[in-house]
Image: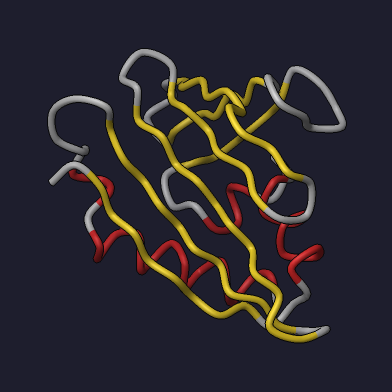
Length: 130
């Protein structure tokens, strides 16, 4: 499989959900396996570097490769060219749809991006963002 695309409904405005999701201090609250995340600059913008530490102590780096404040951002993992795009579509003042889209340029997407794993992450996000 080269990609995975899932959507979920969040009971927050698109702007609030976007702000929560892009804040590195919140990532360990909803992404299992991440114990710490930091950026090289604030506020986040195109080109910002995110570093996160896994439960095994290893660090991974991601770069913001597309950015539209309050609407969408995409990150690319350094070293393996995995991309993830988050798009927030307003449904009402207090609800939005989040589309999560992950893909690779070449080869197969990592096992950590199975639909089951992403569904768990999105469920956790919906629980902590609300």
